[in-house]
Image (tube, rainbow, N blue to C red; front, side):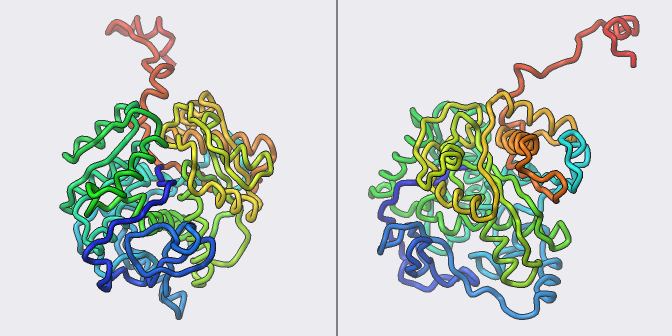
Length: 435
């Protein structure tokens, strides 16, 4: 999970003054002051420097007709095209077509955790590059096309780098992405294999972020679409599709509780936005829901602020095995606090040891091998249930954002063969494995 936290002036493109076709998107709106900006490759409000997000003229009319149209659409995020900043013919363009991943009814995990209501795992490891980042990048690609960019770029903690590399290869863009130099090897290889430029930066993700803020303001960056910088308002909208899918897969109903991992916080804020949109369109019943944010203890600035009752998130230097969540200065941290408090949720963190326990627990009970961020959500859910904060009788969804094959180092020291034996039945019996 990666996000730009330092605003800068976006480069203009030949498309800046021309009309763009991004479907029902009509403008960019400042989250702080409400000032509207024409659609374009910008991410900060000129009036107050607040973050911009996409404003729409969403389809009005019969909710049942809209439900049926969605259900008849492709089995990927483009079934929700009328609710996203993409052209109506987006499904015909070269894209990775992510989404509509499994919502797994996790009865065995529920029994282990003492959950008596329905427990589900939204497993986004089934996306093309095996993380939820394919959703957000797919939207960014369409914005890049609309604004005439030729290179796709990003600052990344790993998953985004792979998603950008793959999407650029499919769509015919050049890619150049930037990562901390010490990422998990699986993520490095997956980001590099698509043939684009992969640049390791000596330092943390926040150092990478600062470098990219310089690059986007330099002539070198002319014609570059940074998915999580000058394309960030569009990119972030991809996370809404998690909310759409969860509700549709639950029979068009909102779960009572959702546990979401937090790095920049963008995913959580957009899931909340997606739920509110579904309510506004009449696609789901308007009912209370609670959102819980999950962080690793070694990079938990939002959790610390929540527990201290603060509205400001104090940056930290990450020190955790959960590199995909290791953003010490989260751009959307204050908004995560607002949503957790507004919905009656909470922000909690777990140790690296509890992360590994969460990964193994999910694998052992449901056959889902999550990356470290998934271990965080499972670990936090377990911790909140034990503390009586999560209600075990309610319908709960826990989000797994990626595949455990990307973060093997987290579990490999304590995971391996049960036994190594001679190829004989006697040896098998001697090892105590006969039943």
